[in-house]
Length: 422
Image (tube, rainbow, N blue to C red; front, side, top):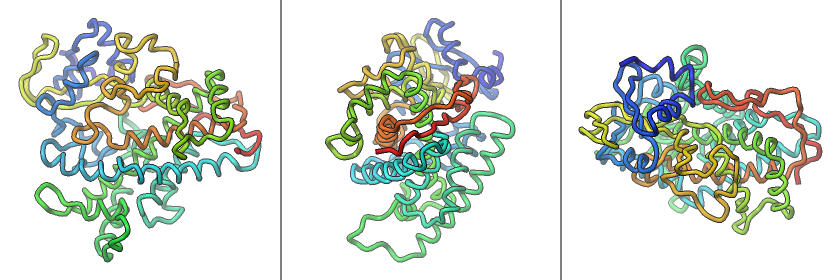
């Protein structure tokens, strides 16, 4: 069987959905990086893929992805009890409602300040969002970093995400960025361990929690692994910049939707819970996550000899779940190529249907436990953007190349505020 690695690199997000279309929506056999692989999608595929009896993560992710995006020894590479113990730490940190509200409030304050700067000053949404998100999450996590170090961390986190799925200069920048940040975060971990424990009445910071976390055998994580996991809090938060740029693109591409958001937030973007989560802004954010390309697929390894839709999958085979295709599958979504926030009006999406960042149970499985943060942060970014009067200069490239992984609007979406934000 011909290896498809070069085809994947050449076709990007379209590679797997096209292969599945040619196969009538059924499983697709291929090879990636010399390894036999089977790609799944469609109804039932998410539940099958995220069942640990079927698919495991250990030894599934290729070295180039670990050395750029996730880090060696990350929670993404664990299964069974070690995974559940490590995952529990992330669930406590990232799914706690008070912590989520605190982070969202920090982002809201910093984002509003950026939009309120001198009218007529161009703002690149992607770059500005990345810096805002880094400043917010580093302060929220209790990282004692200078402003200069936070700016460097923001650029490095963007580089890690931008270069994980490509050969060449972007990939090597990503590797250098990860090495630099792992060294910095390991120093922070050692410093946190050397400091006396926090006051018993104060909740430990993210840094303190990760630094003092013990694995399934009761041992502290080594400083490198702790740094990797600390980065796995900071980096995904900065990566919301991709969704911010997509949201700005959608507000420009569908002005009627932007007008509805402005009307909905005429008295301010805050919802009844005070966190900036109006129903319409949240529905818009969810449709941005569904419509625009983020992760192309998830990967694991067959835990045993399996069968899916009549297709035999030998133990050890690389198993792919088509995330981008799943979010555009006409068997699940009516008119999937139409941008329509009404899909999510007044109702949460089925977690096994909307899978831009993966699927499964976020508390025990491999679904990202920071998904609630992504939705809440993106909702407030959308609400504030919609409330801002701005122009979108014509002399920029707003195209989104599907061959590039990860992709984004080429210009990063440059806007020029006309008046300061309310």
